[in-house]
Image 1: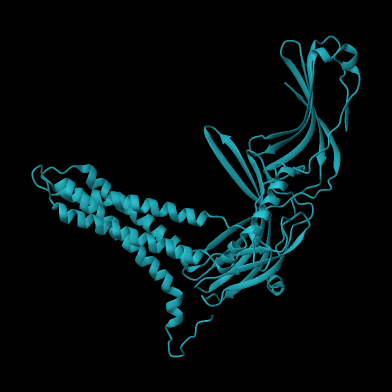
Image 2: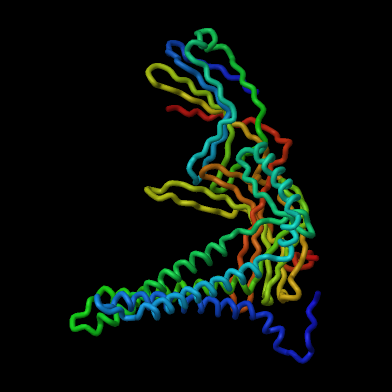
Length: 120
Length: 348
């Protein structure tokens, strides 16, 4: 569950608001994105009062992909709030969170004799 | 049933070891001779025939073409048969018999794929000693097919170009194109033929590698027994098995699309020197494998991948190095924690 609130938006003509739970890849490769949850509020659903009140989103996170910070591939999870206002302007903010505790394991290079003794 | 070996036949073991290799070479030479004959027959007939008279009579031409086609067909038939013989093991035949069980297994893996988005599923086959057998990467076979195709194409071109070059060289003002290109095409044909025979020998001399697992799919922290089975005809200097986690990233660089891979984890699972392998006694061993706890699971998106694989490397004196890859699926554990991290502003 996540709670968010818009502040400092007085005087802005907000046309829509989007809230999503996403994972994105970073690193050497081109960015990939996976949208797990998406919610959109149109102008009709938004009033001055509802804009400033805290909003909650709730979703069951999937089992994959886990957050990961590899050497050339990284996966990060975030709640992204995007607000459209004025004439085609927008602002977005990500709240990152970690899913799981995956890390790069330390490579093991055992002594050769130990390995050969271990065999059946 | 085990074959009875006569005590006074000192060459029998050697003959058995190299019989398939010799067959492969002979079959390859038959195909090559057929291609040269076919190309030469057609070229000579096209170049040297006059409007009124054919250089080779119709009956003799048909006979030569039929002979060339037969040679190509027989050679290809032998090569395919040989590859089938060396690549299909007893284990695989038994697995094919238990096909019904395998289908159930695949359905189970398809269901799991829907539950785990972004985790690539590498469905296993059915093993004999252990329940799961991993599929080997088919890179070797594709390499052989590409080399064979390129060899056939280049030999055919060379068969046409070389007689043309000789014919032009005899003229008072010879054309340069055929004379210049003939040696280059011949050189390329020789290189591809060398590559083709090298890969053919690698496939026929060193048999298929079989990896079976006691548990599958695997999770970070899980342990399983691995069976390594290596039939073949030649003794190996050393056999090594590795567990590897590889990251792969695809990105645009200017107008090119590039892919970079990096091994972020590598553990030697097994190594043995002086491995005796013969047609009667394959190398068969077991060892333990543990996926490190807290390791990342297998992952696949449009431009990024994380792969787990077992790599089997083997070296034999005077043979190209064997390098076979078996992909694994490592699934995430089902109980997952979430934790808070920092907020990142992102203005546009």
